[in-house]
Length: 402
Image 1 (cartoon, rainbow, N blue to C red):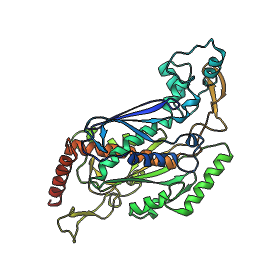
Image 2 (cartoon, one colour):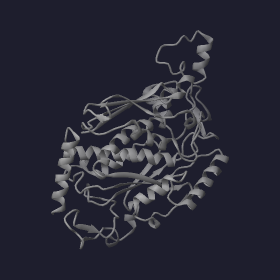
Image 3 (cartoon, helix red, strand yellow):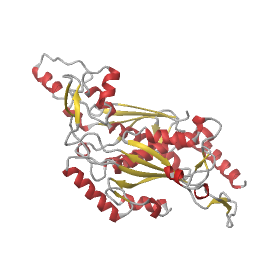
Image 4 (tube, rainbow, N blue to C red):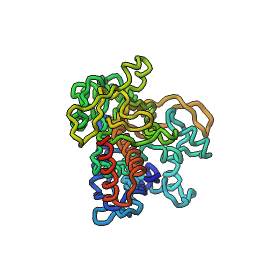
């Protein structure tokens, strides 16, 4: 694939490492382009104590010189401030467990009580771990920090093509907004959402969401919700119908589903298409009477398809709605088992958010941005930004004359 990215590092290890390969040379890229999304990921009403410890900032270690990409792999790292409290228990070097102080530090972080809804049990069995710490350190949503780094780089690439990717929260628990009441001015929705602690564009519903989070906290519980992710400025023809794995809807849906907390993904009308006549589902087409040759002359009367038909972008905004589960680490733990003692018990509790829905939107933006940047480079190529822009603009001009 044109863009590849790899992440490494544990939740309480010394740092997170991210390598992004395939970004053309000459893209202007500063640490602040990434740090602003890292700050957004750490915000949101209902976050836990870890966000008070970390102040995530990216450090470039390769692939960028004097504020521009070189065309070589971009290597970055994000330091874990909390590692100073875990240096012994998360050390990469063998430890002397005959030393009582060392043994105590390691034993205090040992986990054998699995958490329902997390990777704990399956991961321990699959990788033959006795200490579930070996599972939860990597399966932790701390890994989404690395995805946001990659996504922010891809966003910067998309921005030079006038493509934007945004998100906003539709629901947290029982408090929600009817998406049918929202305007199609996505930039306005985004600005309103960014002014809300729960990233909802409706201020009244935002307050209801905060109350729902407060209630869950008081009960020792957690909450999930739903988020809409929108890409605007998308040209016709990204993706393809010629093979199943080239379909854009499948590639984006797979990327969004890979995010830890996601349990369902819907494109456009989503499941509502199963309840309506075809005449109420498919987006009718007309010729734009104001067409002057600088845009696509074909317009839609609606966008129920969510901007993708036949596995390809159709020129309308790409709209996905994503449902996220409640965090599986509860202050009042659920019934579970201890895989060491083989006894029924309660799940492990270490530290938990009450709700990560607002932050999850930032991660979803990152994953959609990655897929879109990937398919754009796949279609238009270019080892440097000038070649990419030339190829892209030439294609747009051809589309506008059809």
